[in-house]
Image (cartoon, rainbow, N blue to C red; front, side, top):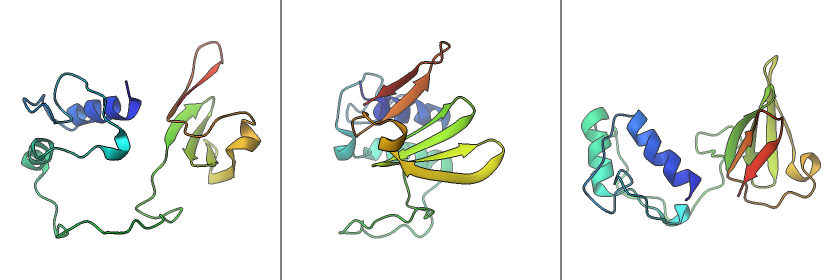
Length: 138
């Protein structure tokens, strides 16, 4: 299973979407692995969410042909994983992580290798269990 696709499917339910009869749809009830980097939303998924929330205003005619690098605080910024560990929230992106503590709104940025020296790249999720063990998913 791919955590991104399972979470996206469940997020669809949280937004009000039901299961789809379209086998290509994210909201199809049976899981089929598709690489997240190659996953397009099906027309059924798009029309389903637009039937609830409406079409986007000023929708662009086409997607940009060249990807742009997101600014750290830009609206296009995305993270590889976000998790709460102990009393802090950790955002992972590429080789970096940002730590946010409950008593400080400023995020501290550092290299993942400084925090976890032997960690392989490509972390998709992290979880801390009741035994204070941190489980990382790639």
